Each structure stands twice: as structure tokens, then as C-alpha cells.
Image (tube, rainbow, N blue to C red; front, side, top):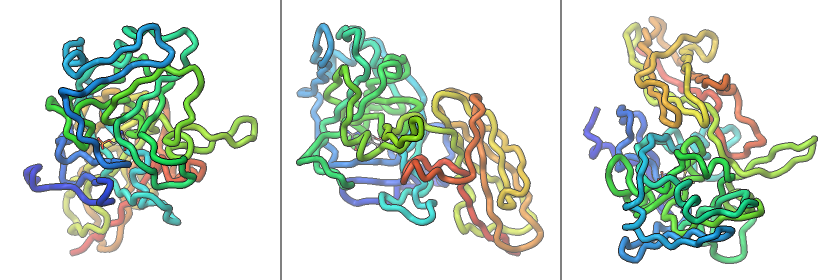
Amino acid sequence: MPQSSQVGLTIRQKEPTNLEAAVDQINTFLTPAELFYIRNHFAAPDLKIAEYALRVGGAVRQPLALSYRSLREMPSKTVVAALECAGNSRVFLVPSVPGAQWELGAVGNAEWTGVPLAALLERAGIAADVCEIVLEGADRGIPAEPPLPPGAISYARSLPLNKAQQEEVLIAYQMNGRELRRDHGYPVRAIVPGHFGMASVKWLTRIEAVREPFQGYWQTSDYGYWDRVEGMPVRRPLAEMPIKSEIFRPRVYETVPTNQVYEVFGAAWTGESEVTEVALSTDDGRTWVEAKFLDPAQRYAWRRWTYEWLTPQQPGKYTLLARAKDACGRVQPDHHDPNLGSYVINHALPIEVFVRD
Ligand code: MTE
């Protein structure tokens, strides 16, 4: 494996910055911050610690304005959580769909430190009829995907109150034991373990307790999906990640030698559960074998896995698939659900390789 500083990231969009991780080159449990994917909808704001204030308001008894220092003085918690962009692996959809053409690398696993959001809500004293907590970032602009809202908007998402009050949801100021980098939300971001990355609002400056479900752009127009209620289609915000595994190595169209042991390597993650099993097929789904985990099951963290593949004697093109299961009994599907549009691409992704003498 090369040193992490030699690996770098791949551009998916130059401006705003959208960079994909080289997951085939990273074999550590924690993804180094400099190799962690970046998903920005607008230019990253340049926030200064000295002027930073986090406002907690809306339906609360006691609105708060917290400086960076006062946040740092509160009791902290550290959580390892995988973040995956809801559009990760979009390039695998056939027919292709608009949006950043993420391959396998809009995902990473990091250790996040900060103050539980629940502690701030407790301090502010939320009203009895609050249903959601809105998190707003300092970045602003005109979004890319129609239908467009009138004029510039900020990046904001809401969380159902019961998730917002869970102790793993952090108002984080550190990633892997260091200050956040600017692209990852410096100085303060939300971390919502178990939810797709879009819930983890960066450059967080405002927290608002609301009495009505929030209908902001980033959970209706974008990052939403079609569900059904008694046969009627309804739009819902994307939230929890389903079970997913990815094959990080070999890469698509890699050439591997015949009749040799090749270490297939990947990771699996899920939402509010633990990954319990990863099965691997090297013959396009006809037969499956169990992969070996490198990490223990830990809610919200990814679980790396390997399999020692004795490559076929017969040269040719082979399709590898990985399929994970979690403790709730969820299994990766074989196909993408079209109701999920260009998001939630968690079906077993085909990795085609060449076996050669
Ligand atoms: N927060 C703000 N303020 N602005 C953004 O554009 N992007 C979201 C989320 N938080 C975003 C944001 C999306 S879509 C994802 S997947 C994650 O941040 C990515 O976090 P990362 O760039 O640290 O990997």
C-alpha cells in the first residue's frame, strides 16, 4: 500500500468541490481525513473560530448562542461512524442518471468527536410539541437540480426528534482526533451516524426546533424519494442507510493471474444495526462463499472484510459480487429500486475482472 499522502482523491466536480476517495488504496479501519471523500453543494465557507457562534432556537424555552470555546468546554463524546453519500455508486445505474457520477468512493469511516446534540437540546429546553430539529449550515447558493427554489438558499436538513435526541448524534469538531478540515465542515458539523451523509450538515451555525415537518429543498426536491401510503405516492426525505457492501479490490477491469490466491477486499456498513455477514460470489451470483471480517461488529462503523480467492485456471472475464446482511435481517437487493431515483444504490454491484495466464 502506498503512503496515504501519495494516494489523493478523484475529481467528480471541480466547483463546488466534489472529490471521490480511492477506496482500493486505503486499507485502514479509519479513513484518513485527507483521503475522505468531499461532497459540497456550494463553495466551502471560510468560518473563523473567533467569530463562530452556534445558535439554538425555534420552539425552545431558552435560545442559545454558543461560541466555539463554550462548545469545547462541554462534555464530549467520540463515535466511529461511516458516512456514505446517498448518491454513491450512481455510475453503476443502467440506464445512467444525472448527478455526480460517483463510483465506489463516496464513502469513508472516521472517528468523530463533539457534543451530543441531545445535550444542547436539553440545555435549550425544547417545547413539548416539537417534531423535528433543523440543522443549517453557513454555505449558501443556488442549487443545481430543478425544481429550483427562488434565489439562494443555505444547506439545511431536519432530523426527526427521536433521532436528534440519540446520544450518538454529535455536534462534532474533530475528525480522527484532529480539528475538522475546511472541506469537512470546519469548525463544527453535525454527525448523524446511521444516516446517509447528507444528514451530517457541515459548517453548522443554526439549530432550530420546529413544530411542523420541515419541507426544505434538501429533503424534498433533492435527497427525497417516492414512498407509498395506501397506494398513493408520497415524497419522503432520505434518512437511514440500508445494508451495503462494496468490493474495493479488485477494481473494475483489473487483470488477475490464473490459479493464484488473490485477496479480495472490501467493507460493509448499515444504518441502525450491525453487519453480520458478507457473502462473495466470483461467478456472477451462481455460487457464494462467506468472507472473513477484519473488524468486529460495531454499530455505525463499517466492517472491513476479505476473501482469499483462488483464481480460476480458465482465463476469461469473471464477475464478482458481494452481498451483506445485518442483524435486523436486511440483505442487499439484487437490483436498484427505481422509486429511489438516483439515490440509495445498495444492490450487489458487479465488479468485472479479467483472469489471464
Ligand atoms: N453540509 C453542508 N453545509 N453543505 C453540503 O453541501 N453536503 C452533505 C453533507 N453535509 C453538505 C453538507 C452531503 S450530501 C454529504 S454526503 C456529506 O456532507 C459529505 O461529508 P464530507 O464532505 O465531509 O465527506
